[in-house]
Image (cartoon, rainbow, N blue to C red; front, side, top):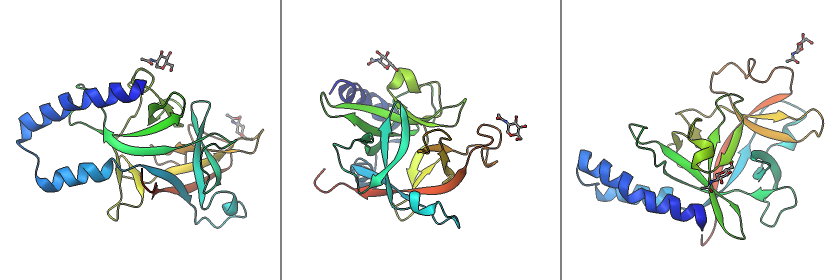
Length: 204
Ligand SMILES: *[C@@H]1O[C@H](CO)[C@@H](O)[C@H](O)[C@H]1NC(C)=O
Ligand SMILES: *[C@@H]1O[C@H](CO)[C@@H](O)[C@H](O)[C@H]1NC(C)=O
């Protein structure tokens, strides 16, 4: 795994620095790290009062053309609509970010296996995926989960939004970082708030 190796070799440094500062991690913290690294699919929950809700609710996220899209319900790879995200949380290795931010990693292809970061594009608010070079200048985190560990949060909130492509009628995932209904970044498009949930991949 090309990027996988990059990610995984970078971790001891980051963890080492964190440990030097805060002392040894407790058993509980280590368990939490291990749980965060369990792989999951990302499923959409949409409770909006809209005739379009059925196009979003219970659908699974897929990756295509550097962006994140609504795919089929319970989709598995191979999937013709894109690569079904298989994700987990891990610290984003960047010494410039203090404190260290938790990133969201996803496998993006099978052959050869390749891991990328899912991030929020700072100019467009789209969720995108890419390697460290592509992502480092953007909002790479902090990602986390809700208290029950089922929901996915970004920067402490769940402001994920499905935005309809007016030409293809496909739904793409954005993040409403400014909490303004994406009125500045995405005017004039159909937008529906969604939440994202972890569906653990058995045996992964
Ligand atoms: C990172 O991704 C860019 C495209 O976004 C690519 O040009 C570059 O070669 C990749 N870097 C590595 C180390 O794979
Ligand atoms: C959005 O729609 C309004 C009203 O129809 C129009 O004035 C404006 O130019 C549109 N903005 C964009 C970015 O398309």
